[in-house]
Image (cartoon, rainbow, N blue to C red; front, side):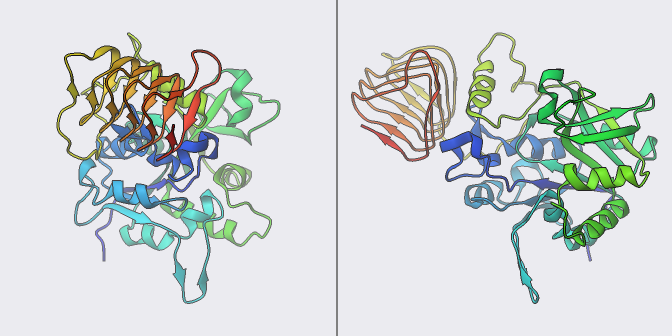
Length: 377
């Protein structure tokens, strides 16, 4: 039997992220590379580590191979303790059968036995596909002080964008008085960040009752939260003012990445006070030849540069050949731009190749994307 825990985390990482097009054709969204060194899931796992939450269940489903391999033992985030650590939780079969996760709430419901192993007082539910730094301990302190059943992290968003989120209204004490999932005409701009802290007994009761409803979509935003509110549960909003971004579309991913190259980036990857950890393989240092021409770039380990690279993010193990020109672009791990090739305003998937003398992208207009292992001749 596992030792009791005050708080454990359940990290939802099974989403496809189809709006990232070719980038998620072979990889789950949380495993997509970001910032030259990281993968998107690094942010949630690092938040757990920095918040002293050392037991994390990661729920996978869509294309989990890269994600499973990347997380490994969890040691990269210090999440490899004997009485906790990271556990990969894919859908599984029992003597009565098995099924895919049918919604966010159903995914947690199917893993209630995992939660019970640790007898937690509190359960943090997270999404593995957002970029942000948050000390969950501060949110937990707020949850306990408020004597809440459920606390939802919220962030103010422009009112014209509010219809894309779960939106809530609160009273002066922060207690939620109304919640609507993606309302057509939002009454507030307080958006759910998809980060929840439940009292464990409240969570289990809500999931079991929801599982028995045939008309439920088994979703926290559509079903669990509205039902708890209807039943007069104590639901509170925890306001967060820091950087938070869902890079769920190609334009969002591209512009958020490129902002890292600005003089004052919104997301500071070099902030040592709240580090983001990574499980990037150990590679030799990057190499820049005497003929290379570089300006305003992030360069990952193991990358070799012989050509011209301006305003780019090059992940680990990339290669830029002699005479090649790469501008305003993002290269994911292992991407190659061979001799005299030209890449402009593009995102190249992992291990993709632009062959000698070939061209990819255009100076203006849409962002060009090629998927993992794709070859342009």
